[in-house]
Length: 190
Image (cartoon, rainbow, N blue to C red; front, top):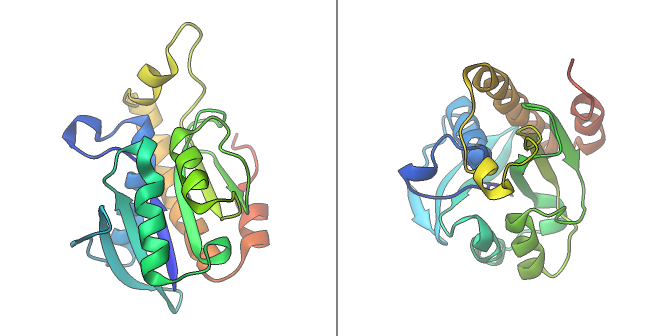
């Protein structure tokens, strides 16, 4: 069984913001695999289904970004998964161009508070992740204001493509194709 958690902030106020791309990817995956996100448990909106012959739980933590680890820890404990292999975290990355992906087996938080909290709750940083680029913050912008901002029209189109690619990458990870996914998606988009 796999848990695929997309990070974001709850409430309408944050819908469509850069910081909520994890939620948007989960919605894309849920649509693609016809998984209903109608379960409210572990301080998350969840859905159970199948991807590539594997049971999956999709999750959108409702703890707010900076406390994502509370929800993820609860899910990992309840479903008794091996988080080093069967937990996939999807989140925004300001160091990547809009819609670009980077897939990693492990790594530091890189300044991302949601990942920092997950690492604190798991006690390690070894878990698969799909980073979705939201573009670098412009000079003079406050980082929090930037990630809580919304995409422009052209960026939205790039992000839709990024969400689809992230859904493909998640399927590859569920199939155990980490290296293939990294080779396919960890390259600059022109």
